[in-house]
Amino acid sequence: ATFAVLPGIILITFGDEDTRSSETYVVRSVAGYDMYRLGRTNRTIRRVLKSRISVGQGVKNIERILATPPIYPWWIMLLDYIVI
Image (cartoon, rainbow, N blue to C red):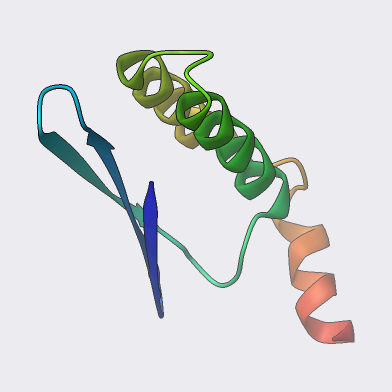
């Protein structure tokens, strides 16, 4: 997998050497990084790279990660921006 981080988005590309194909996903980043989701995504990528799961299963995992609600409510995140 390869990553490109730009303000507001993260591009993630998964390549499959067997079929010589790739899939690119655009992850929108609102106002910072959700380290919990980033960690889950990283674990999924490592599992794909080590052939523990298929690319298709990795994509499904990332779709589930994207669909999960944030861990912290909006008001805690607002306090975080005020304090930092």
